[in-house]
Each structure stands twice: as C-alpha cells, then as structure tokens.
Length: 429
Ligand code: KE4
Image (cartoon, rainbow, N blue to C red; front, side, top):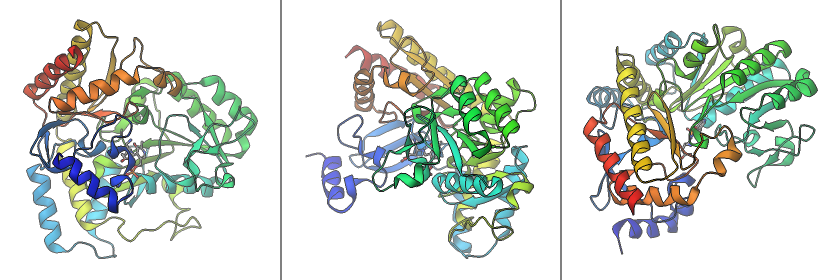
C-alpha cells in the first residue's frame, strides 16, 4: 500500500473524510489524495517524495510560489516578536493602508481569518447598513460556508432559497434568492419584485468556483445600475480574484470596461494572507460606521489581524505591487492555456480555456460556459481522466471540474513547457 494511502486510511480514522476541507479528499475525481510533505517555488512533494508542478497554490494564496525568501523572512521575524496579542498592532494599520491604497472603492477594511468569515460579515454589514434582509447570490458562486450562503435556487423568483447543506434551517435561507449567473432578465425581474427589500447582491466577478466563468460586462453593469436605483449594496467577492487577476482585483478589470465602476463592499482573502489565515472585507467609511464598536452590527475575532499573518500578507502584497509583476504572471498563465489548447487541438479533443492574471480555467467543451448549468454540461469524465493523467505525470491540477487553477510567479517557462508536454501524454492515453 502506498504511503499516501496509508496516511489517508489513518487520517480517516480521526478526521471526517480524512481531510479538513472536503475538496481535498479527491471525491470529485476519485483516487487517493496526495499528502504533501513540503513545497518550494512552483513545486510540492508528497509523502512518497513525488514532485508535482503545483497549479493549486493553496487555492490561490501562493501567488509568489512557495517559500518566497522575503515572505519567509517577514514571517520568521514576526513570529519571534510574538504569535498573537489580542490587541491592536501597527502592522494591521499598514496592511489596511496597503489594501486601501490598491483598491479605490475601499475606504476602510476589517481584517478577519477566513474568506467565509469575511463574506459572512459583509452580508451582515449590508443587512445592518440597509435595514433590509433579502440578498441575491448566483448559482455556481461560492462565498464560503456561512449558513445564509449555502443555498440553491428555489423554483422561480417567487420562491427563495433552499439549503444545500444539512443543518441549515429553511428559515435562515428564506431571504436568499439564487439566480442564474450572467442572466440579465432574471436580475431585472428580481429587482422589480423585491427591490425595496434587497440588502445586497453578492457575486464572484470571475467565478472560480465554477472553474472559470466571467461575469459579462453588461451583466455587471446592469447589477450596478439596479443596486444604485434600489438602494441595495453590490458585494464583490474577490476572495479568489483579489490581487490574483490584477493588482486592483477584478473590480479594476471591470472598471476598464465600465468607466467609474466600483462595487459597494469588497471581500478579500487568499493572496492577502500569503498562505496564512487572513481575509478582509472593505467598503466606504459611511457603511463601515455601522460596524462594532462604532455601530450596531456585531463582528469580532480572536485572531483577526494576527501579527504573523499580517506580516505574511504585507510581504506578499509588497512583492505583487512591484512593477511588471502582473504582466509577467499573466503572460505565463496565457502561455499555459495556449499550450493546453494546442495539445487538445492536436489530440482532436474539444477544449476551451481562459485566464485573467494568474488565474485560469479550462473545460472539455467547444464553448466557454456562461453559467453553472453549462459548466455541468461539459465533459466531466474526460476532465477527471485528464486530472489523473496529469497527476501521474507530476502535474497537480485542481481535483474537481468546478475549481479554477493558479499560476505563481515562481512557475518558469520550462515548468509551463513540462506541463504542456504532460498534457500531450495525458490526452493521448
Ligand atoms: P475560505 O473560508 O475557504 O477562506 O474562503 C471561502 C471563499 C469565499 N469566496 C470565494 C470566491 C472562495 O473561492 C472561497 C474559498 N475557495 C475554495 C476553493 N474553491 C477554498 C478551497 C476549500 O474550500 O478547501
């Protein structure tokens, strides 16, 4: 029995499913999860010493690659000064100032420990600031596992959501309306029917939890218009896209297509923690004044703004803010997608890919899906075979059709070429 399997068997005795987050169990693709022993640059090594070119990057945070020297030094120095104080620190101010300096729509931020916590808090803030309860999310978008967001669509606009998870009471999701991504007619009808009761619309601007699906510009523009008309808040969940697709996040990409575009509330995570538990939500000072200790919307956290995590995040942001970082990262990512497309074309396999900055996705399909149902209609079996073909050839892709991939600044042209060569082998087998 392989060491990975032995570890998996042992893990399953003491941890549900053997993992601390479900996607890691490989249930969507089958097979035995790889237990990672160490990582460096663009590589990870499993418990059997097998090296993988890593396109998970901890699901986004490791944009610099693993073990970047400047980040490592910052974390080691911070750790020697103390792990956690439960009191304010200058470094939290520095990180908040760095985020605000890079994202014009944000005047203040609150630091928390996970994207789930940030998304949950953003929803509570939107409800508290507007005095309204109803929210809109979109099928295929994931905003963390807060109860109000574990919802699937009801039948039509009249019925609100139903829980996607056991343990979530119907009452909790009865204020959540789930619409089809990129469907302008539905968002217009929803606002026509519920506009005065809507606290917010929350969206993944590029849906990395449907692999890689872009919100179309007219769709984003219309949501912005309707939120402004009806007094609802537009929440951009940039946990995955923030500082990943561009220095200013996805909102800076949309601001190029929609002059003056700004969401009302932004949610961040992943890259801003650099691999440590750190996330954030931010908005105008006027909305933030509703948050405790200033206002009646309660939100708190023992490790919020943790001194070691903020050191890691700050060191990471300093590196990504350097001139040319995203141009180089975007070029590497485009080279990867172009190489995979060419390999699929030469193998006669329907394939389509897309990328923005250091985030990419691909489907075994002729067309790029525009919403969740279209993603599910792509060739999942071929995706799973390809996943294992690549894993066997030392390339670690996302172990699920509905997940995005991530390139780091540590991935070289040689790593990309090796990945494409592995794809040619995987597609031929
Ligand atoms: P966390 O609570 O996992 O830090 O963040 C939740 C979250 C919120 N918003 C978006 C857009 C996200 O992508 C996530 C988390 N992403 C998943 C990957 N699809 C994390 C991986 C996992 O669940 O193990």
